[in-house]
Amino acid sequence: MMKLYTRLGDDGTTSLYGGKRVMKDDIRIEVSGEIDELNAHIGLLAAESDAEVSRFLAEIQARLFIIGSSLSSTVGNRTWRVGKDVQGEGCLGCDEIARLEHETDRLQSIVPALDTFVLPGGSIAAAQAHVCRTVCRRVERRLVTLSREEHIDSLLMQFVNRLSDYFFSLALYLNFIEGCDEKKLYITCK
Image (tube, rainbow, N blue to C red; front, side, top):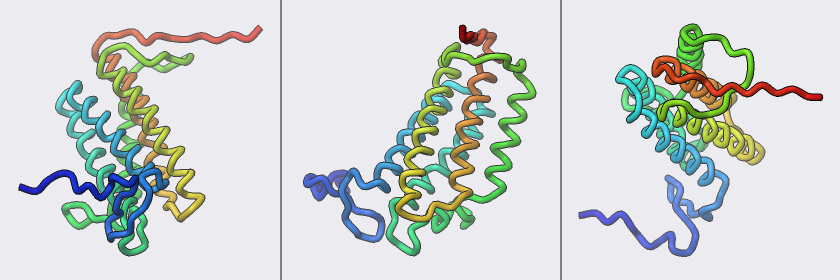
């Protein structure tokens, strides 16, 4: 049986794919860890969602796993585009962004229009979608930090930005189909 531990990281370092050792707080490791955390939250959301939503979330999870793995690589040019999915396709392209936009628009067409801010909450699934949204925004901020050190393709930035929008729309949709009223927040400045 292969052991999960190697003891090599006991000194605060870890290996990138390709063999290079870096500190565990290296920005690439940070971003990969944030993506991994987002993926875990999406898994929880999928467990609370219907089959249709869960299937779409599984596709997102697969893309995020490949992106996170590719960001942890020293092989090739180490960009997320290096990775291939199980069908041999590139990690991400304009089609995935268009699909996220389409699904976000579809969900928005179902729910009542917003006229104010909403507080995260409602059903368990909707609250979890809001958690995914906020973790996704953190991933986006860490990608910006990484982009100061190395090239991050604009498609990846667009995908993560659209993904957080999708989670917001999904939260509204999940509350709507569960019959949960949004907790609206009206702000007035005097």
